[in-house]
Length: 247
Image 1 (cartoon, rainbow, N blue to C red):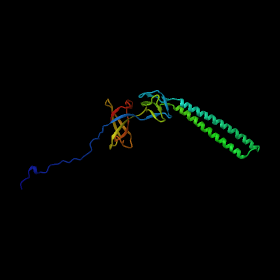
Image 2: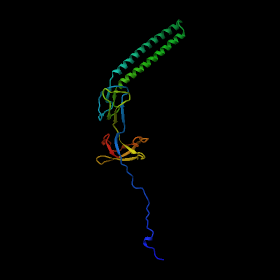
Image 3: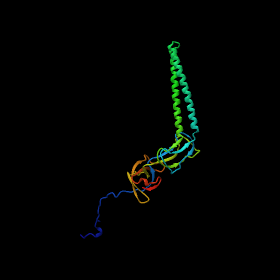
Image 4: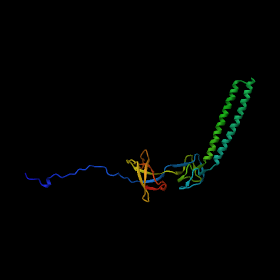
């Protein structure tokens, strides 16, 4: 038979094993945040009379930030102190009555039931006195709560309270980024699992290693992203709060 032509010969195929390439890299923007960011609020409601700080200001632990108008708080304290005075007078009267009835009982001039009623009145007077004492303590605490102090050293990243503003108890008037660890907050697209480690790139070209601290338990329903917080493992003092980095 005639030999096959070159075109009719089967092609030579080289097989290679498919292996995974180098690690995949995902670049996202990250924002420098404090490890602890505390919303600050008064424990009592009232009208702000003084604002002593501004946003971006560094504060120390215990520094006074805001003060409420103390007049209403002082009047409340005076009212509770008057109630306490009345309760103490009532207790003294009940004690005197109880002593008199006991003496009359010893002499046979009254019944045991009358003594029991006097003892009951005395116990009720004691209860009223104790309740009035507790209200005085609460009013004194409220007077102290009219002065909002920094719970720790840090930087005020937001201040919203203004003099003359009426605020409710628990309404945030400032946000304090406490001194300490700095983190990078990154939002990952839906379906992407935040990795356990990463890197942050500074403006001078330095690369800082990142370690995953926490991941949000659910995807944000609006942005369809998942928030993750990464601890900066080196050169934390060089990071500026609010700065945006490449992660």
